[in-house]
Image (cartoon, one colour):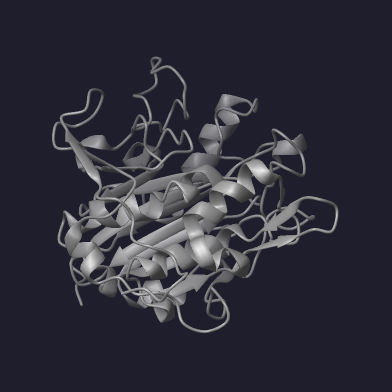
Length: 334
């Protein structure tokens, strides 16, 4: 049982099958976790919602990327791209991966080719989500490879490829052939990996998805494939810093409703009638409350914007997008 005043359990997830526009085996989970997941839930311990940072930026296949050594050791290949090493210019300089922000499509596609190559993949191996800022997690397979790879979120299918996975802000798989990808530029990119069950998920968590418990929906989808929250490792990528993410009551209110007594750990007044929200910290709290051990949650210390290596929509809208890309390593099991 969670301590009084802490985050309470989410509502049971809703599963749908046979969604149009994707592989017939794809399942969709909307906010919440099932009974088996809730049975393992625990709350975060200690005064901070996040343990010490566990990510590093390094050079790989010609690009500067961020990765998590603890996840690599557990058999996962996951990176977060920076804004460096691409061919775009102006506000998109230089490794913009967003096809929907006004950059030239041929430049973005070359950037996507370079990013996929870091994982030994081609653009057609990557599965992208539509990312409507909601609580939906979709289970995908190799049959979904190439979705959104040549069109971008919300774009028509066109001649170059198929739509990104519709309605999804998180992608889940057990298939090493599928590279999962999430686009961000202030929202939190989250990679979840159960090395025992060999289940992988990538999550896009903006404030709307966070308060709608997109991480709970993702853990529910992972549980349907055999994962357990207690075995999950979580990497939280670069996002807007808590000192820069100023929000109004329209955001602070839902955040308090979702986080309960833990809200004060990630939400504080800015002194001017608004609030400062620690979005990565909020997601770390929700993951811990859903049963992911706090010691297995690895947040990046890096933040978006401020002249750093990661694009920020708040700094220069629409600007570029960086990405979280991840795939399971074939044959690796703990």
